[in-house]
Image (cartoon, rainbow, N blue to C red; front, side, top):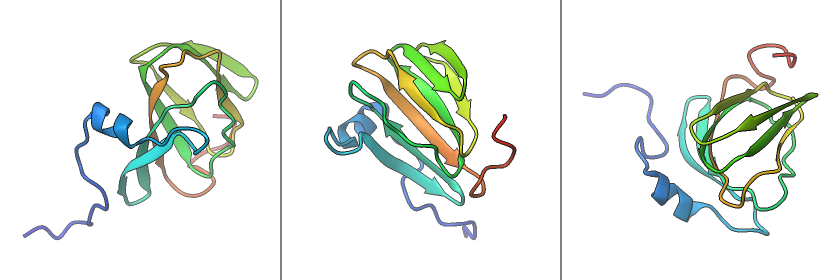
Length: 120
């Protein structure tokens, strides 16, 4: 008998299934795929401009497709498929100079305000 916490989304999802679930602009190009406890995970596919705002939870991005740069506070880093990027809760950030096929898994977790300081 399973007495653990109940998952609110599937525990397995293929990338192509997730891609088909992401709304196209003008809607926010993000779709949540999983949620468990404080963790939520989804797929983000920005188009031309990334105008996201800082988030209330810490987050990790895993680049699946595309190339570009992540601007994180005063830092800037190039990324490519397979890279993982972390942004603390509350930190200004955005994708910049990215290719049209940018496809990113996003995982949020932890308490509101994040687990550490915004300085990383």
